[in-house]
Structure formats: C-alpha cells, structure tokens
Image (cartoon, rainbow, N blue to C red; front, side, top):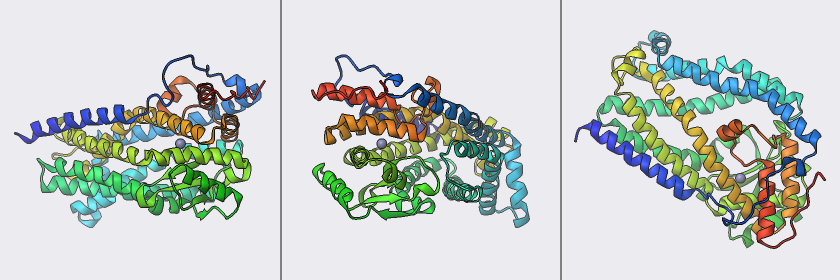
Length: 428
Ligand SMILES: [Zn+2]
C-alpha cells in the first residue's frame, strides 16, 4: 500500500471512530425522553431589568471578542497561505544561520507573536467592557501579566507540536503521520492529566477549603456520592474577576474539584453544595477523561488532515516553500490547525452542553433540591451577566453550557419526573 492510500484509510477510520465515540459517548438525553417538557422562558425567573443589563453587557462585549477571534484566524491563515509566513520565519532565523531548529524556534515565536499582538487592542477593548460592568477586578498591569502568561503557555505547547511535526517529517517524509498521530493523541492525554498541577498554578493560587461545616458537608456529600474527594480546593479567582464558577480538572491522581473564592463569598452554603454536586457529576462520570479521549482521537485525526494538506503542492507553493519538511512551512501548519480548530469548535460545544446537562441532573439527583438549584442558576446568570436568551447563532457556535433558563427548565422537568414540588417562577 502506498503511504498516500494508507493515510487516506487511516483518516477515514479515525473520522468514523471519532464520530462513533462522540455519538455513543455524548449523553444526548440526560432526562428520560418523552412527555411534555417545561418550556424555556427567561421572563419567568429574570426580571426585565436583569435581562436588559445582561444583554447590554453581551452586546458591548461581542464586537471586540468576536473581532479578536476572527482577526486571529485571518492573520494566521494569511501568513500560512501566502509567502509572508515563510519570509517572516526566514527573516528572524537568518542571523543565527537558519538551521531547522532555529527556524522552528524563532519562527514559531515570531508567527505566534504577530497573531497575538495584532489582536491586543481588541482584547484590551474587551477587558475595558468587563471592567465597565464590574466583572473584572484587574489593573492593566495584572491584565498584561495574564496576557503574557497565557501567550507563554500557548507558545510552549505550540513549539512542542512544531518541533515534533518537523522532526518527524524530516525523519520520515512519507510515514511521519503514523508517529505524529500517536504522539498527538498522547500529548492531549498528558496535557490534560498534568493541567491542574502544571498550568493552572501559573494563573491562580489554590488552597484547601478551610475546616468547618461547609467543608465537612461537601466531603460527606462526595463520600455519599461514591466519589470520595480528599479536598475541595479554593482558587483566588477574585484577583481577576467577580464572576462565580467551579470546575473539575485532571483525572486519576490529578483530579480535583475547584471552587472560586468569589462563589464562597457570595453564594449561600446550599448554593455552594449544589455547585459542588454538579462538579461531582463530572467527576463521577469521568467527563474530563472522556473529553481527553475524544480530544486524543481528534488530535490523531488532525495530524492526518495536516499530513494530507502538506502533500498538496499547490498549498506548499502558496506558502512559498518547496517541501513540507522545510520549517518555513510552519505558518502553513499553524494555519491548517487553526482552521480545523475553528470548524470543530461548534461540535465540541454541542457535546459539552449535553455533558453539562447530565452533570445538572446528577446535582438534582444528589441534592433533590430543585428550588436551590434554580436560585443558584439565577445567581450565576445575574452575577456573571450571562445572556439568558442569547442569539441562536452565538449560542450554537460558542456556548459550552446550556443557558440559565434552559437549566432551570431542566430542573422543573426533573421535579415533575421525581414528583417533587416544582419551584415557582422567581420573577413573578
Ligand atoms: Zn459543569
């Protein structure tokens, strides 16, 4: 079999495998199907003034936020599909002799830095909107430090990928993708595993929740749920935001449940319990591991698409290089990755929303307290200025969670199925 045929077969197998894993792994119906459903009605639980304030905030944030996303993609694609990317790599690495390692290192830094700097004003505009609405607690200094840190973290991962890609292509131009796909999958698993202990501490400090009634009741609940936890960690999120959040990250030895300090400050103990019950749902169903495995399959697929694209002489010519092993093609590699990431985004958030709904059902099963659940959802939405009724396109492309009113409707559906009194509307 020629390497090209093998590549096409591998790509087809991976695409089918990824689709099957996604269809079977996604909890499409967290509640039993059938029967009437409580309609999603933002006005039932949110007074008009709250809806208006959230909509005004989102309307102010969207122009810079989406312009930044689009411009990043445009700059990456223009650098990759024109000789400019190759020229930039050449220009920054020539003084050091232009060996392939220097080209990857300095070229990788230059191409990503251009993409980052071009959108910096838009990101500052978005930050000024967050500040105007009281969501950001940062100074411009600490904001810039954050920008630098996240650029640094992204750069390290990008450089690891680029060195891997070009080392493999130079070693085996025909079959590099076999090893590349395996290495890509492994990298996703390793990063996901190490994330809580390597990357999160770059941005936040974490402390165990202090001893007391709340800690005891949360750990008891985890025990009762069959997901024993050593600790609940508190992140110093208030240095950055007033928003409320909690999450689970890592798996196996690195798994942890984290709550924002802002949540402990503003929410009642019952609401914190509900948030943690939702996170226990993620832990119990091993959602982080599921996401990592889907991500690993996705990374292997991505490497095969990349290998196929790099066989196109037309694309290489556009990028101003004559062979895929020339590290000046790194801008082309980054452009292809960026386009695939953008295209797969809506599928990823679709799966994410179903997984979030399942964690909500878990929280309701565990606490049997739909009343506190909808009060907690209301607090999250109002404090974080989430749009209770976002434009469908925005929701479909970007929303990782169902909207507040959708989650409240789910809680009322749950109450009816469990024959528990349904929580009355909060805004009437
Ligand atoms: Zn969640």
